[in-house]
Length: 128
Image 1 (cartoon, helix red, strand yellow):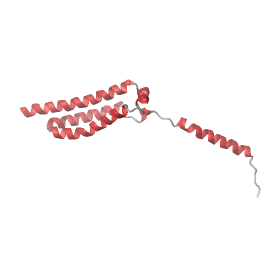
Image 2 (cartoon, rainbow, N blue to C red):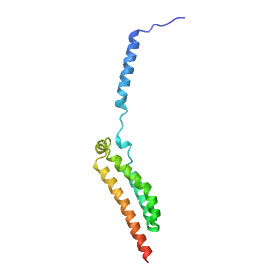
Image 3 (cartoon, rainbow, N blue to C red):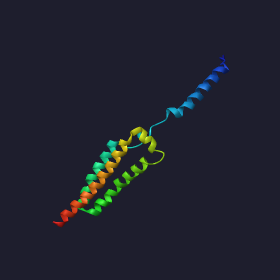
Image 4 (cartoon, rainbow, N blue to C red):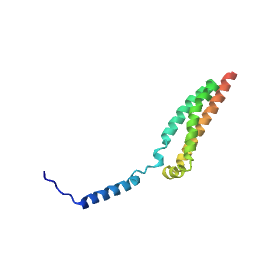
């Protein structure tokens, strides 16, 4: 059986190339923070659906609207807490700018206003 001899320098070169490729892997795998956060479109879809459902339920039966509103309220609270966490906030601000924060806060405001309007409308219906 005939064997071909490989030079030790070829193995050493392959080891160096593999080491260089592995050392560059973390630089290649860097991902942005904004990839992990919901897009403003998703935030608005969730807000508008939750506002409509929870506002109507609050007008019909306030206890039912409050109990259903707990889910979206916890989600929005988690979103705001994550946006302001010290390890995410600077990167999110750099990647999305201040408009992401503005859109999220306006969405939360729309949700709260829809609950208040539903409660007000329900009280008006019950008076008549």
